[in-house]
Image (tube, rainbow, N blue to C red; front, side, top):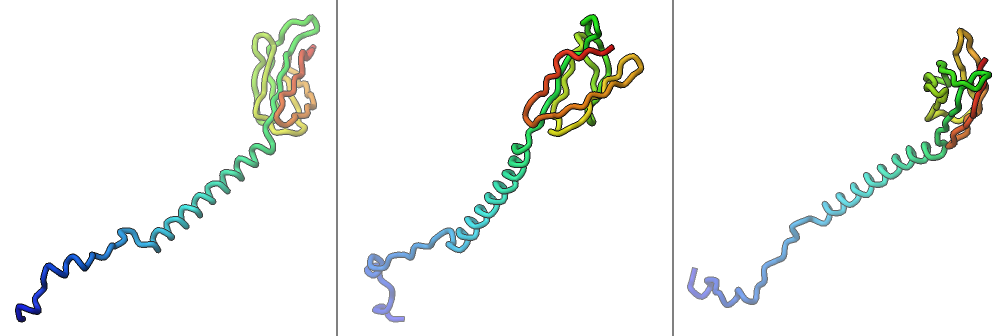
Length: 133
C-alpha cells in the first residue's frame, strides 16, 4: 500500500459516525402491544368481578328476642347457611346475606319457630323486638 492511499485524519472530520439506536423499533412496538393487551385484560376481568359484586350487594338481618314480659331471650337461630346465638340482651345480627326470600329459624325451649323473611339487597332488615313465648 502506498503512502498516498493510506488513510488520513483529514477525512475523519467529514465523516460522522452512524448513530445506532440502542433499542430496535420492532421490539418497542411488541412491548407496547403486550402491555396494552395485558392491561386491557386486567381491567376487563377486574371490572367483571367488581361489576358482578357491585350489582347485587348483600343484605343483613337484625332484631332482638324477648319474652311476653319484655325480658331478653338467649336462643340459637339460623338463617340460610349461617347460625348464631342471640346476645345476653336478646339481640342478633346476620350479615352478608344474599337478597331474596328465606327463613329465620329460632330454637328456644325445645321448639323451632320459623319466620319467613325477605332480604333486600344492600340493606339491613330490622325486625325490632320479636316476642318468643
